[in-house]
Amino acid sequence: MPCMAVPLRSLTCCAILLFMQVTELRTAPDLPNIVIIYTDDLGFGDLSVYNPKAAYKTPRIDRMAAEGVRFTDSHSPSTICSPSRYALLSGQQIYRSTGGGGVAFEGPGGPSYLTPGTLTLGDMLRARGYRTGIFGKWHVGLTWYDDDGKRLDGGFANSRRINYANSSPLVDGPNNRGFDQSFVTPNCPTTDPLYVYIENGMVKLPATVTHQRSNLPDLDGWLWDNDEGFMSVGYDFVNADMIFFNKTVDFITSHLANNTDKPFFAILSTQIAHAPVLPAEEFRGKTSAGPRGDFVWQLDVLVGRLLDQLRELGVDDNTLVLLTSDNGPETVHYNRMRQEYNHDASGGWRGMKRDGWEGGHRVPFIARWPRAIPAGRVSAQMTSSTDLFATLASVAGYELKDEDATDSFDMLPVLLGTRKEGDSVRPHMLTQSFRGQFQIRQGQWKYLDHVSSGGNDYSEGFLTQYLLPETEPTATGQLFHLGKDPGETTNLYFTEADKRRDLQALLSVLKTSGRSAPRGRKPIGIENIPATSRRD
Image (cartoon, rainbow, N blue to C red; front, side, top):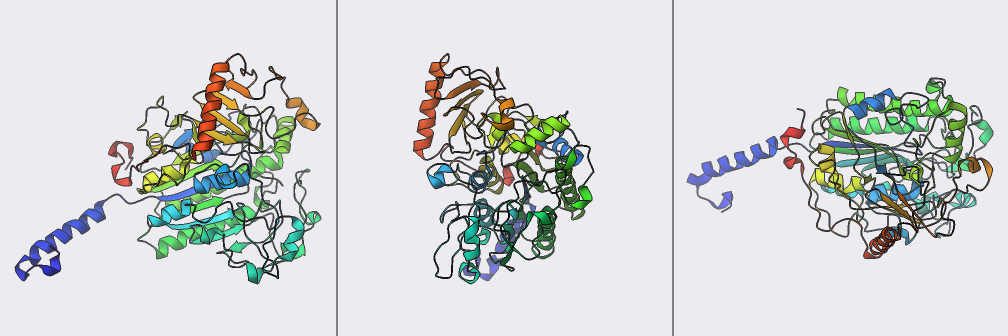
């Protein structure tokens, strides 16, 4: 019976019951704050904790790994940026949105891959009481309109036709896709026009001038893939990541001062180490590995500063920080670092950005959460960035519907160390290369549903030196056993025909079934994290 309906003599009992309920709520474990540091074109071998032979050191990220768990079989869902970002934010492969592959947007490209009704990371965590923010590179498409209210297609020329009054607030910007606060660029911050900042769905300073590449420093010839095009006055290329970092810290600091009853979720979407290579001035010359080495050093310093800030704010212990990359290293970067600094940005794996081979999508993944993740662990569990969705849902106690995050597996037991290392969470994993072509893993078996790289052309230019002979030139796909052949050198398409047919059949089922993740996923919930996995 409700307390209001009981006689006066029973009020004491109700008061005791209410006190017990409030006490229980207060003593329940608090949901952690969450920060995702999403890097750009950072290869498996670009951090010294992954690559002892790296041409420079990344001491703060190495320390982050030592204080948490580091994954050695982690993958981006795609080998280029926009599809991977869609997958991170939705827990789904890009073909769920497009029916195939997905381009990297330029100009006023859109509409967003995140179509209305798609549950996003921001939506999900906001539903569990989080205040959410994203800062940096958005690049999953935006809808822009001209003077007549007609939606504009991509392309640099169309940047001049944007009517900002008709376009703002952006109907498919971050603030309409689950984020309370945002400060983003529509495309690659220093590569692809349109060069404007968008804050909470509004372009405060429209593009009115044309960017000239000659206005930027060309550090030892690393100023390339910087397209000239429409920009806003004062747009800052060199300090882009410093701006994004400061916006992230401001969001966290303001949140802790004004929203003590809520946890926060922030994505720092950095451009490091995308082209052009433009480390901020304070980081230049800090390594002996040239401008790109300095660029990754900048990332390392910013990660360290963020962790220091969390500690100074008193929230380090219960903040889950995750770091990963959207794909492997850029081709020119890979080549120059190999030739000039003996640095293998792919960390020994074949291929690079755009390729379906491992170097195109095997990326760093580090998770640190002092309250819950035991320190000093290395996991060989196969995982994808799509898995962050179900994993964070499991932390927050959000029960995903079957139609949500359809390619996302819950890796929380692996983070906590409660899952045996040899007991794989994933029975299989999908990735997609530059042209949307599929690769599928099952254990150590990997099938590529295409010939060659699925991305870069190795028949011309400097890439010819990295071309390996095709052992089965008449095959229409590629089959490798990564345990025996990690370099993907010997195509077993014909010699292991039964396994190839099994993987082809599995790929067909996963593509047509509408999901690769299991149905009926149940979150673990913060209250069920075993005390033995905590360090407080």
